[in-house]
Length: 84
Image (cartoon, rainbow, N blue to C red; front, side):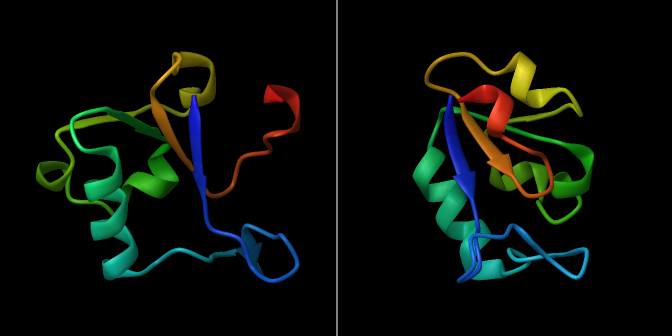
């Protein structure tokens, strides 16, 4: 899997339980980056995306277990340590 994450200067994905990544330009950049590849995310992250803007968007709270090699995973609030 290819992880997409937005981090603050301290390496954190959340600030006071709020996302780092709520930005229209960032969402457009992610859509362009993944192109026609699979993009996985959980329901929390999917709230900010328009399903029509991502060709192969998969939403599942167990997305990190579902993704295969070459798939993109947008991670905002899920620990990644066990997937190293």
